[in-house]
Image 1 (cartoon, rainbow, N blue to C red):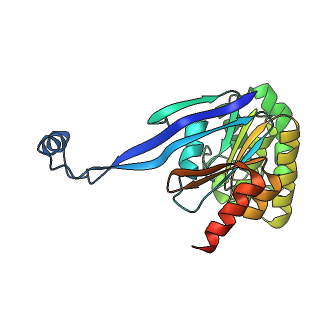
Image 2: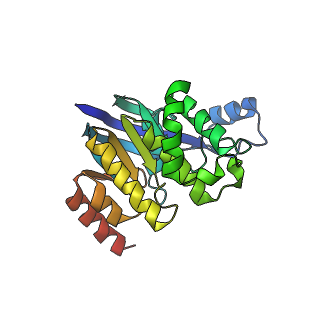
Length: 245
């Protein structure tokens, strides 16, 4: 069964200096044809579909539209054009610290994040110890989230996202934070999730990681879909492209 389907999905913004101008002035200037606002297309005509249990690696240089696309699939943003179907519960980890309160403790934030993902208190009570143990934060449960290092924050966020049994897992550059041992453990956990039937989207600048883990790869460049298909073929093309940069 196809878990994620996108058909000609585009996302655009209107950009310009609105800081010292009222709505009336903006409308008048637009009617006069003197408007300075411009449309910026972050994602343009992206089309792909992935099946249950697949891992889609998303590659592209900075500004390619990878994070915007993840936000659209997560439901944080709506596409400007095109259609999309996402079938299943989603756990997304798009930006380090997203969904956490810096003044709450690790324990409190774990339950807060679980609630935001739609899980019951009873489920989180049963899962909490596994989350903390996987994140290796046993000695920091009562510390404020703001007191954690970036690596600790990443470990907690990844642990919550992965251990709540999501049907769809979306990870945007989160495995690049933390030490090598935890990255290896994270990869192993992701493979377990995939074997369990979950569908995963992974954004990574590590082409080696994408080659090792992905079943399909999507390559974006300046918002445009360059290629979608088998891992080796797309990664080989992308590697050649990087040599020209």
